[in-house]
Amino acid sequence: MGLESKTKNSSWPMDSKCALDITDSRPSIDPTTEELAVLTRFERFAFLQTHEMNQGRWKRLWAWCQRHIGSRWIQVVTYNLMKVYGLENVEAASVERPLMLIANHRSFFDMYAVSSVLFRRTRRPMMLFFPVRARFFYETLLGVLINFLGGWWSMYPPIFAEENPEKRVFDKFSVRRLTDLCHEGFGHIIGFHPEGTRNLSPDPYSYLRAQPGVGKIIKDAKPQVIPVFIAGLGNRALKQIIANWRGGEPVRIHFGQQLDLSEFYTKADRVRTYKEIADFVMSKVAELGEIDRAKFEKK
Image 1 (cartoon, helix red, strand yellow):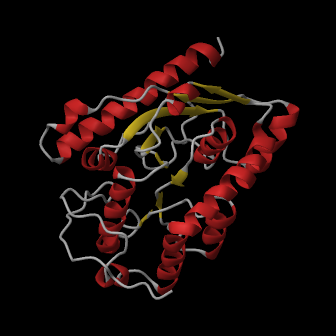
Image 2 (cartoon, rainbow, N blue to C red):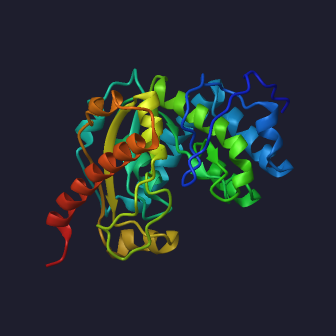
Image 3 (cartoon, rainbow, N blue to C red):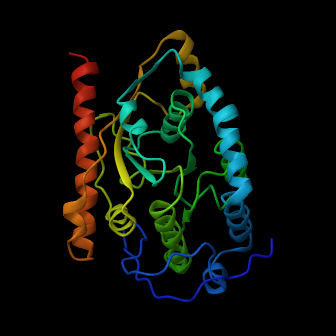
């Protein structure tokens, strides 16, 4: 693909839990040669392909596909069960500034369902980005195909170091890129799970500990932030599809009001501040969960 480095080297120490940097640097679109060098040949192929697909005309093409193709099949397999609340909060957000959706994480299909709702029930322009752990989506051919056919390349940028600490060098780029996407971009919507991985507890109102990486991104980029609570989705696609016609648990998506995070922006740039931000935004997701519990929990 012939990607040339357009960046300067910088030093970004990484948080041990979520592989996110904690120093400032100018954002850059492309990784350096040194950052790419730590990836395997297949990982470089997967990244460079996805990287190109998330820029310019390619990104606009895939956004069109998401709206007119991808969102339709998700709608078909969920429309009997889908219940959506607070969508007006997303519609009220500015399209001139990036919008970060902070959501709990219980299913492989959480952000698929959220994006389908936004595409089908709003008219706002959208460019979607869902940062993911690189394992599977960037390390296997099947993962790359799912990112293309299921996500229209939107599972980007990847974080590698959670599985392989030696690749923290590359994750310096991923954090720069993610911060840039959250700081500036017309119609940008970034889906983020502060828990970092799926919560497999049977209690839909339980949450894993929020990781400070999201707080770092929010403090540096200052995007619009809206909490989202999701419940009722399973991890087995066929079972979920059958439930849509035979009856099953409602799929509920609650969009909260945009958060005022200004009190955190004057605090020192340190991990403690990032953790406070992460805990705060996750508490707002939990508040939406309590609203859902009052509506749907079996007595």
